[in-house]
Image (cartoon, rainbow over all chains, first blue to last red; front, side, top):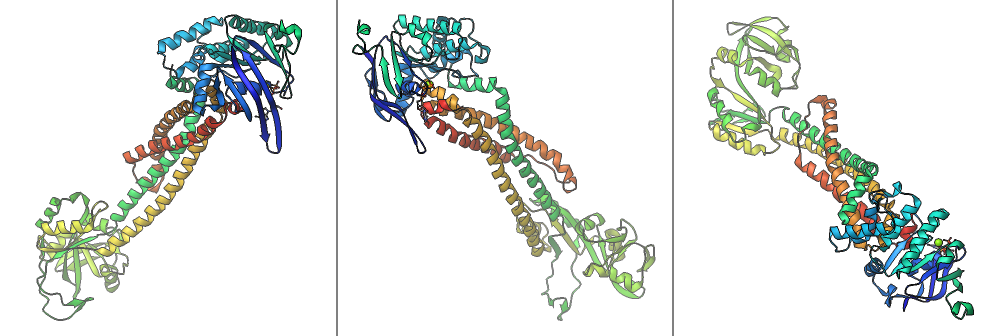
Length: 235
Length: 385
Ligand SMILES: Nc1ncnc2c1ncn2[C@@H]1O[C@H](COP(=O)(O)OP(=O)(O)OP(=O)(O)O)[C@@H](O)[C@H]1O
Ligand SMILES: [Mg+2]
């Protein structure tokens, strides 16, 4: 089943007289349960692709459907609801709220939901335990290591059980060992059926993906998941 | 956890930032409160001073006869010996509804006496009251206090060549000159002034009063009301307001009020700007944070809720503390101003207004950047650092 469908998506940034085409009529679909890697040189449009997928920025043209919902056909407040219910985000860094503890950060998406206080707490602490931080709940972000912060961010992204997890260079600022721990965690989530789209620069991460898309100048340069691209991949 | 908790944790765990913000807003509020309560105290005091400045109500005996006198020129008719006011009736003044507005009562007795073969006017006064009413009097020597003492008007000093310490025979009684009244340009220059009871006995008018001058403090009642009240308790008299005095006084006060208002408006604007800029900066720097909230699925409404709730708490806190700081500053500054005679008094309206204004200005200031940040596409907000 196709979870994500991008149809001729173009995103242009206009700054003054300059016009940058970050995505150029990009068409892409992703099946449920895929762990998709997005690679490509700097400025090739990877982050833009993720933003467009995540209802964070409206494309200049084209349509984005996720789970058969036309994301940019939704009203602004409905898009927020959509993000809360369907998506989990992990950004490279600075994405925890500095004045909230690990547990409170994980509870953030639940703060505007109707669960009881006890239920919010239970879900958040279960998720923190799942990412391996059962004993760091009351720590503030600044009291956590980079890898721990990243895992808190993953827990927060997952606490609403979203069908789709979007990650922009989650290991970008981590050392090899910590980066591996984070990848193992994502792989484990993938094994349990989670759909993940992850942007990365690091070729070492390739082994974890079951499909990789290479971008260049806003276009798909290579896609390991396309059967007509390479015969060996089709098997 | 609910939205309130996020606000609460933010204020609690980023105390330094919260305190800085509160202090920034507080300075604005305190400046306004200080200047407003200073002008308030000073204008009250100025009013008080002005109202002590001379009599504004005059009580004279009722004359049944038509007054045939214009500009001091007698136009005929027999000028009957005027009635006098009974001194005992003056206690009635204490029974009028606005008795608290009566500041000074200056009863006097008037008559003519023989001195060195010439007829001169003598006035008996209640020394304390009179010198309060006639603040512009400038006296060489000292005012009369009691017994056979005389304060002599300038014209008489010149005519008789008098000096302090001289003894004079008046109607067969010895008086000592204790003070000389500098030229006033009024009828006072023609007077021999002595204590009331002394004059009454010399003039043979024991228990009688020729006229009463009254100073009324009338900032919350029209002088005319007091005139009517006095007329009722002193039926044998004519009570009149000295309109001229009242008008000048009101004019002077109005001028001062206008000035005070000018200062107040300027200060309120500056204070509001201070609060505005501080709050706006504090919210603007949180654009990225707002981006995170939006990315994890907070509606614009949720973000505004968070920001405005925090702004409200901080503003009210700053309003209360700013008011208190302003009061303290006023108390500290008052003794240094206007001879230290002006006093501070609680003005609940100012307290409420200070907190309410801080709240409104804080909210309006927070709303603008919060709206701006929540209207950005989440990806743009996230980009901000
Ligand atoms: N908000 C923006 N305004 C203007 N131009 C932008 C904006 N965001 C991205 N761009 C431009 O769009 C192009 C794609 O940017 P994007 O961030 O998607 O690249 P990327 O592949 O994520 O690069 P990197 O690997 O360095 O993160 C770049 O040329 C960039 O300069
Ligand atoms: Mg990027």
